[in-house]
Image (cartoon, rainbow, N blue to C red; front, side):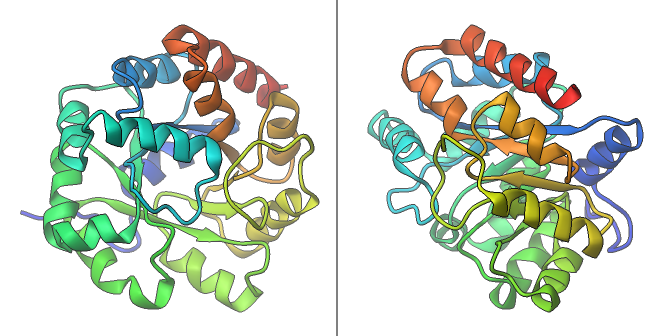
Length: 266
């Protein structure tokens, strides 16, 4: 029996985020690279306990197109340690962290596994969503169909340069939430929040009623709060991963996410 929701019925990730938004909460989605350290699953638990509303898990790939130096370094560590997609999903299957999980990876991994096989592997691991940034809308239907059939929501991205008509089509097809790209370029910390981050957040909220979360270039609690003034939430990756690369561990990750939570809660 299929685990998919109907096209008009939100899946587990979107329903969870909508409910928290309806309760007046701004959404916080931290990112961690799977396999980057032996305690990465402990980090995931710590993020949930510290106030994450959902967590993005990176499945490392050798040739990422949107990841900047920090997440690339984490991916290299993970791959050097022998991390595979199967190993990451196997670990996730053994843990319930209490909030929805979404994986982020590249289409090469999805294609090699096969759409149906990969979608069902995600579902079997308890993963609610998938972000595949190098899969364009026009070529995504076969994957999205298999993902939906398995009950996995495909989160699509809208860039600052995306025209309104295309942004509307992406929002209509996106499930879970709409990922607004805060700045043109790769992931990474920025000293100041790009004006495009707030602009894309405000624009998307006029296009869709789905949860809108802004990521890429959001680096600290102040920037996260500024983004959340015009969007439903924020995705923070590189700033957290850098701390983990520097040895912060689960406790340091929780401390940073607690600071982000306080920042966006005001």
